Structures are given as C-alpha cells and as structure tokens.
Length: 126
Image (cartoon, rainbow, N blue to C red; front, side, top):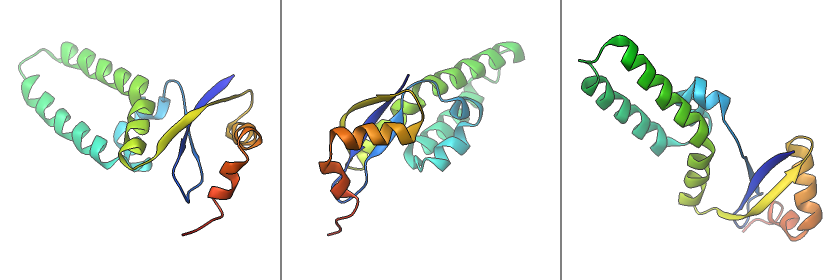
C-alpha cells in the first residue's frame, strides 16, 4: 500500500506527495530539486555543498566519500519532507493522507470519492 499526503490551495487542483524514500533525489538531488521547482532547497543544497567542499578538503578521500554518501542518503530520506515544506511556503495547506494499493490515479480516485468538494476547486477560476 502506498501513502500520499494531500495538499490543497483554493482554485487549484490538490497535489499528492508520496511518502517514502525518493530514489531520484538520492541519485540526482540537484535535478530532482529543479524538476520539483524547489528553488530555495536547491540554492541551500549548492551552498552547503560548496562549504562542505572547502571544510572537508583536508580529510582523506574515502572519508569524504562516506560523508557524501551519507548526505545523499539523508536527502533521499527527507526529500518528500522538503517538498511538503516547499508547498507550505507557497501557501498550500496539508489536508490529510490518502492510501491506495495502485498508483497515483487510484489515490486521486479515493480522495475525490471521499471529498467531492475538492473536485470543484480545479474547475472554478477566480
């Protein structure tokens, strides 16, 4: 069973953010942040990377590699939380959680079946 958090904003369709480890964020964090339009997180990631490069320079290469792997692992585990934080900064409100056996389409179907009022948000424009 997959779980998503539901985020809503008036006059916009709800957004689902999947729970769990983000493999693409673990492997390609800068590209993942760009794709998700997480500009502030990307700037912080690049700035902290530059600072870490200077600070970790005197350490042996295997230690730097392990630290880099650990940082990437943390990004993979917390990427969805950073995405939710970015949505909250943009005015999205977390409505709740939806779970479904299948993919995102089934999760939307369950959400709209339970909350028919959300269907009108995507069609009404101010």
